[in-house]
Image 1 (cartoon, helix red, strand yellow):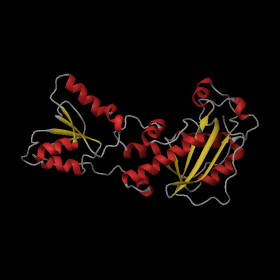
Image 2 (image 1 turned 30 degrees about the vertical axis):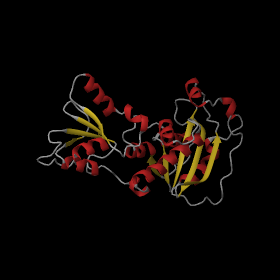
Image 3 (image 1 turned 90 degrees about the horizontal axis):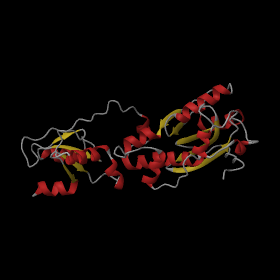
Image 4 (image 1 turned 45 degrees about the horizontal axis):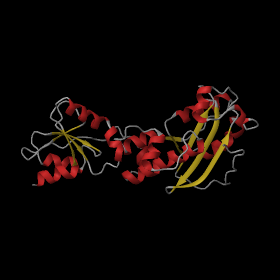
Length: 287
C-alpha cells in the first residue's frame, strides 16, 4: 500500500520555480509527521519528487488513521523527522514553497521545534488561496474537489499525491488566469474591484445584476453596465438577475455556488429574480 523505501534525491537538485510539500500526521499534535512528500516544479512540469514514511515518535490516533490509513506498523524502522531534516531543508530552503493551506507549514515548524532543529526558511504560498482567487465560484477549494474539477489523478491523503496535486493546482491557476508566480506572491489587498457605473438609459435600466464566474470590474460587467444595468457584488434581496458568464468553467459545480442557490431560493419565495446565461442575455439586449 505504501512505499517501503524512500527515493534518493538527485544531487544537485534541478532548478525549480517552486516546491510543494504535504505531510500526514499521526495524531492531533501537528508535529507528529508520519509521511512527507515533496515535489519540485519548473516550467509547469514536475522535475523531482521525494517521499518517505516517518516514525513520528508519537502515538497514532484512530481519527488520523481513518483519514490516511497509516498505522504504527507502516513506520517500523522508518527514519524520524530528525533523520530527514537536512533533506527537507535542502528541498525547501530559500525557495518558494507551496502547501495546500498552511497546516503543513505549522507541522514543519512544530516538528523542527520538537526535535530541537533549526526552522526551515522559505517563502510560503498557500494553494488554497490561489485556487480561491483563480476559481472563486467553486463551492469548495478542498484538494479533492479541485482535482475532480481539474481532472487530475489524485489519491487523497497520500502525501506525495497531495503534493503533486497542489502543485498542479498552482500550474493550472497560472495558465487559467495569466498570473505568474510573482503575481501570486504579491499582496492583493489593494486590488480594486469597483463595478462600472450604469449608463443613464438602456434595455437593462433598473436591473441589478450579479455575475457568476467573471469579475464585477471585467469586460462582461462593462458591457452590461453600458446597457443600463447596475452591477452588484452578489445575489441579495434587491438583485433582479444572476448572469452566468461564458467564462465560468465550473460545469455541474455552478449549481452548488452560494449565489446560484440563493437566487433559486429567492425565486421559490416569489422574488422577481432571473437566472440567465451570458449569451442569452446579450442576444436579448442586442435585439
